[in-house]
Length: 144
Image (cartoon, rainbow, N blue to C red):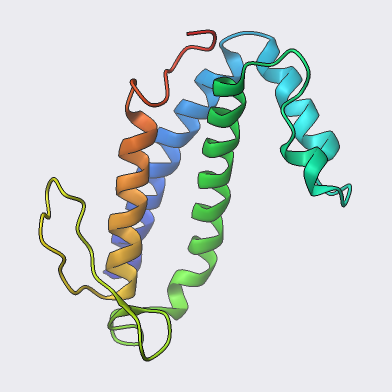
């Protein structure tokens, strides 16, 4: 049940983020130029070059494209790990024995609550997705 519900969450999230990514890349041909720049610099070993704003590009567009791409990569990575971290095997979201993370988004859940690590990640990914969908933060059309 958890796997199927997580898969449906990932499919929903994937379709939303794919839609955002598609809108960003297809809004104008400059999107493809950004994509080529990312592909050309990634893996060259020079992290400064990878994150540097290309000459003539809009900073907001560059940040939006890279933020959505990073979110998609993290989502894919988590998809490969989620079978190993279940509510039974990971009952709390923690960073070692001394630190426990509790979830609160300030809107739906105002006071921090204890949740399993998979539930925490689900809440977190949903929250990030809602931020990516927020027009005032990430406009859907390039050049705004």
